Image (cartoon, rainbow, N blue to C red; front, side):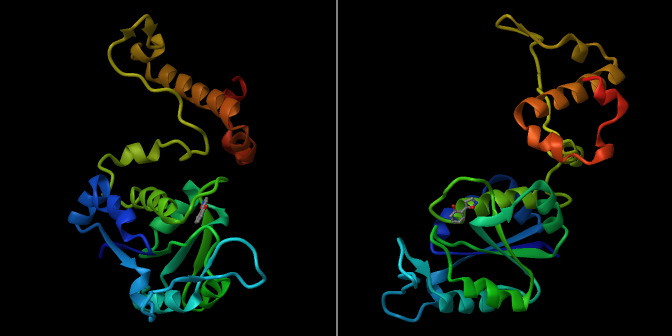
Length: 241
Ligand SMILES: Oc1ccccc1-c1ccno1
């Protein structure tokens, strides 16, 4: 049975890229099934109203609970995780993506920046797990871009979606470190040469060099990742770096 992804949004056309390329092929091959649903389908007024002024005052508008509950009752298979992108969420990481890829599917609720009435998440938690997640510390106008990011990160981990399984294993963040630099032909290009070790054929030396580059880059660009590594992640050879 395919991994099921459903997205509820007021901008269904924004999710069109989900039908293209990698995901498109996976969908054709029956590995992934994607549904995009317009929230306004579950409104009941002539203006198809989805938001209203916030209680307690303040800027912007908040999305009303009733259309969301009707949409989720129609779209969400019982027990399926509901993912709500929000700047106020826990961090979405590769580890979270891997956890979700092992589940039967996901339902995404795309909200506007000011958010969805909190009672929707509280109510939804009665019918399955709910994850309020952020994809990073910046402000978007709505959750749609975050959904594109998360759907790509999760579905590429589903067996068969990415051709070369090994490449998935050797991703940045797969071992908690950043990937080092990559090179291809020509060996000398505009006065810049590929590091000779990579042309040496000495696979042990190449592996050592790559590990060292990965550690060096992680220390330089993401010291937070280095600090977060489990105690035993760095071997004796690594300490030499
Ligand atoms: O900024 C946002 C607005 C709406 C929904 C999600 C977000 C967001 C920002 C970062 N991660 O998610």
